[in-house]
Length: 138
Image (cartoon, rainbow, N blue to C red; front, side, top):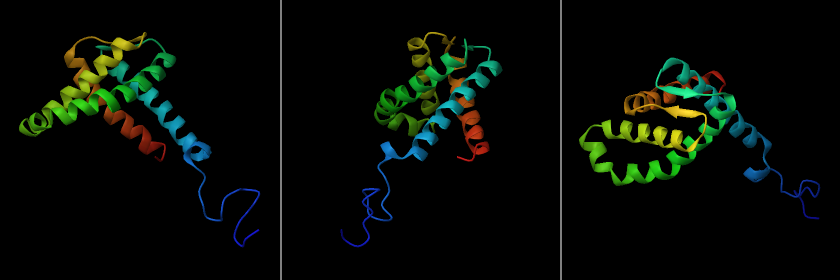
């Protein structure tokens, strides 16, 4: 065996395990997901136009919101970038509200009633999620 190689670990010293095998990364993502679910429940208590029928529905909704925002939302933000710039970011808030509304159509137990609650909910969800993550040390 060469110097500096640990056969028990299978990796050279100082090398980091891939993300799939690094439990700290996995713990980070799970905690972030749980905090997003809690943020969604908090927003549902604050805004009357958003309903969540339980923490399980909030967790599923958090996953769907993340997926929809990362796919459809990203494409819309790229396509509508000139309008986002022209409106000084107002269209950005509308896109985020639309993503929240779209997620509510896909998740049973999670409802957004109307466009205004969707836009306000997306803004409030961002703020609450940020605050929860700061409190948790992320």
